[in-house]
Length: 258
Image (cartoon, rainbow, N blue to C red; front, side, top):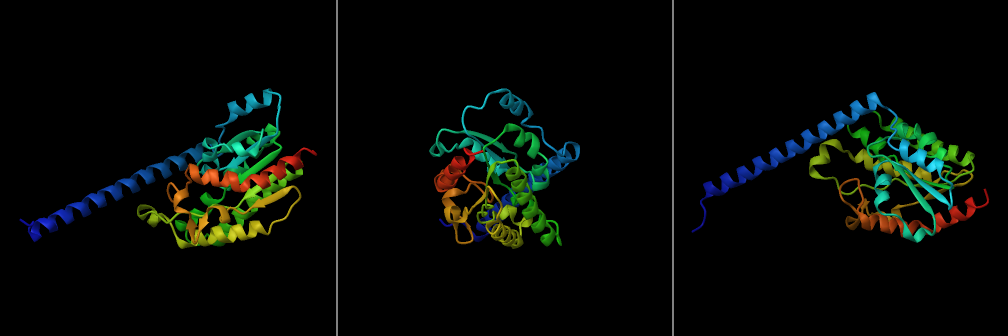
């Protein structure tokens, strides 16, 4: 016996209601997270998350080339997937999720320079650019600030004799339905603009690693590499490790002449 049209309609209505409740819950949780982050930044604009680990590293004698990976969450998640194909080196990760380049640049002295790195890999900028989706009229200023801060960090490191690798900002995955109200196509366009400017950037001891040929499939990141709109899974980092191996090896060899 087939269900009546009324039962089908009620079932569809119930599913729509459940979907609406799930969406509202997701957005509510996001709102709490954003509020918490804003409150944290107001109280402590510069994070000291790595203060204890930094002190421990400074107290030890460095016995092998040291790479510091510096940036936000997509840099920080590299911590879980070290690059075993980069040779006998020490990898120190100083990525913090949710940070923008104005926050990151203020950690440069404590979280990078004080650790005497030979090579620094920079991955940052997406948290800056995605703000334009909820802050209308900030597009040009945000693009300029993001580019200026990334290159300012690279210049400062270079002037301290450190080899620098700037990785282009990773492309997003297709935008999740519940994230769509907090996203705009302008963000994708801005990522491409900043990346093109970074690829044209030239400075002593600074190399630009174009990650698009490794990660991108058309407009978005390859599906097999993405966890969500912004973050990579293990396979994505393994692909990056392999793809960046030549440029990392070159930087390590160049650092030996310091």
